Amino acid sequence: MSRRKTPSVNLAGLGLALALLAAPAHGQQMRQRFDEVGRRVILPDRIERIVSLAPSITEMLFALGVDSRLVGVTQFCDYPPAAKSKTSVGEVINPSLEKIAAVKPDLVLATTAGNRRETVAAIERLGIPLYGLNPRSVEDVLLSIRTLGDLLAVPDAADKLESGLRNRLAGVAVRLTGRPRPRVLFVLWLEPLMSVGRQTFVHDALARAGAESVTASRPEDWPRLSLEEVLRQDPDYLILTHSPALERRLEMLRSDPAWGSLRALQPNRLITLDEAMLRPGPRIVDAIEQLARALHPEVFLQ
Image 1 (cartoon, rainbow, N blue to C red):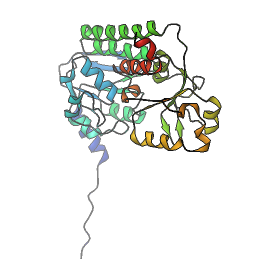
Image 2 (cartoon, rainbow, N blue to C red; image 1 turned 60 degrees about the vertical axis):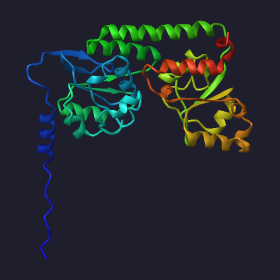
Image 3 (cartoon, rainbow, N blue to C red; image 1 turned 90 degrees about the horizontal axis):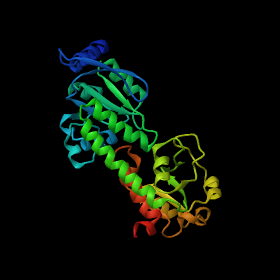
Image 4 (cartoon, rainbow, N blue to C red; image 1 turned 45 degrees about the vertical axis):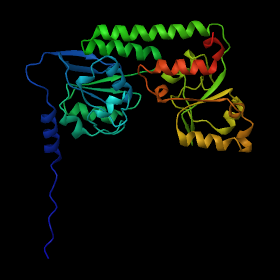
């Protein structure tokens, strides 16, 4: 029996085909911008087709009222619910280049809070403009909203959204003026135990909610902690985002002799937030308000 020959794959030809598939329409005026990580980006003057590579960016675009331009999102872009009806281009970490090229975007939006450099480089090689956001603080999130308003020619919508969020943050700050700040440990992951460092938007959100993070001195974005360090810090509260598996594991730790003495594992010391706390988008303000109410209920009941 003769052996069937396996067809060879012309990678150069595949790359050219994807690049041609993704090429922008002719006749567009182009403009130069520098994104939030300092990359030079050549953009079409009119941006009508957008791919978002992060849930936080998708939420910004919906909040700005330009969701009709979204032609591609990741499989984790689930808020608002209408985002789930958009074409999926795959995962945040490893999206499909073929699917991105197929929807012919004028612009791809990415973020240092979730996307890989390798993904950015691959999309650039296809000749698709990619603008990167770099959220290191809550203030950065607000500035990104303003930037997107400018890029997408909706400055009024951006001003309205930004002003509303700033007013809400100011309201929280006024209520918390002079209040003691409980010491908290934000649990990003349990095995290994991971938290947040001082240069992250999550750390800034904790501070704005009236908390003092016990990992505030850590320079890493997502530091790993030992049990000994947690016991030494002995935070007043543990804070985590909703995860049934994580919550069950923490409940099991209550009966562990090593963990059982931890103050933050005593009743009413575990605060669970929704996923907005980990998304540098408009709902980060919702998360700040939620946490501030949990930590300082007395000033929000007045």
